[in-house]
Amino acid sequence: MTAGGPPHAEVALVDLLDRLLAGGVVITGDLSLCIADVELVRISLRALLTSVEGATEGILT
Amino acid sequence: MLSEPEAPRPAGLTEAVYAYAVLLENEAAERAARELSGVDGLPVRILRGAGTVAVVSDVPADAFTEEAVAQRLDDITDLERLARDHHQVIAALASHTAVLPLRLATVYLDDDSLLRRLQADDSHFRTTLNQLEGHDEWGVKIYAHPSITHATTATSPGDRPRSGRDYLRARRTSRDGHDVARQAAADLGARVDRTLAETNLATDIQHHRPQSAALSANPGENIVNAAYLVPRKHTRSFQDRVETLAAGTAGVRLEITGPWAPYSFASPPQEQAERAEPAIPQTTP
Image (cartoon, rainbow over all chains, first blue to last red; front, side, top):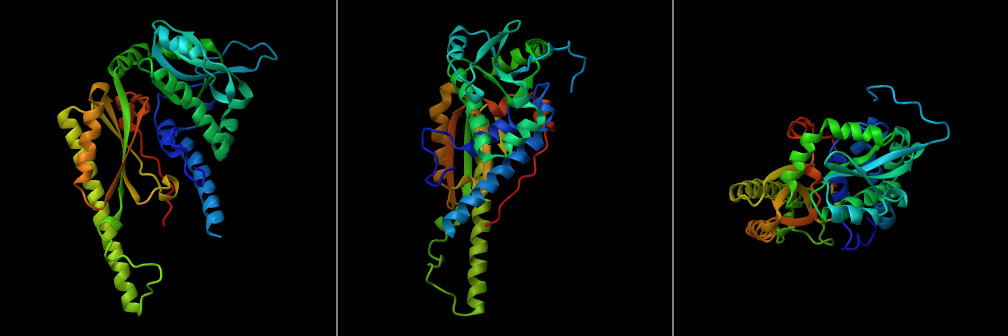
């Protein structure tokens, strides 16, 4: 997600989050999994978009 | 979320158990796991169930409450660190044996609590792990990239429309180009699905939501964001087939990612079917 793009050996964060937030086994946990699936996705996408918008502003202005 | 009251915890003891993955007993994978560090750099250990094992880290409980995790996910730096730490453990295990990756930030109060949940789903976990053995997940992303078909009509930055009508015409041409490319990308996606299913080059298919243009940081609009479960012996044929299909389609761009641990194929079938597509904030260009 850095300006020059992620190094090739490292998987792209967006691809990783597609899997980690919408995939994987859900077995009810005691603590964090109180957060519903959708919330997990929504919260992190907000963080992603904010950071991208911030970066774009920096480049364009 | 507790179905039964937990035994009272001794005062001052504030550790919880963060779980990464479930696998069948496997000496090589378990040996590798003991060398790994997981979330927040914490050591990884094996928790042995009856036939399956869970790979876990002991974490400070207060760092993984619902509120604390929500905060982490809301900060891009923390989110990325957590995701990469989690993924690193799963990827290392997956290079040895079939793994069932757990959803990010799955945390239990203690070993017993996790073992009870493992026990409850034991036969399902074993069945799924046996099905996943010898398979990898591969990602296929298809982008609409109209400039490939409409290079001749594209205006250069210095080329200003001479009248309002010219401007509208240029706008329409560009929009039509986008529509054509979007359709071509969607058609290609359907063709890829069909071909892989017919040839058994993939044994399962999942579609993720398309990635917003801002996030993918790649040219074109992401139309198809699919994951395929591919038998390892078919890896080369799978890639060749997908690339060949894409090469014959104008106006699209293809990206293949992988191999991944089977994140997209770890849930029970009924749960995958029931899971609603989450609404994505799409950024419009």
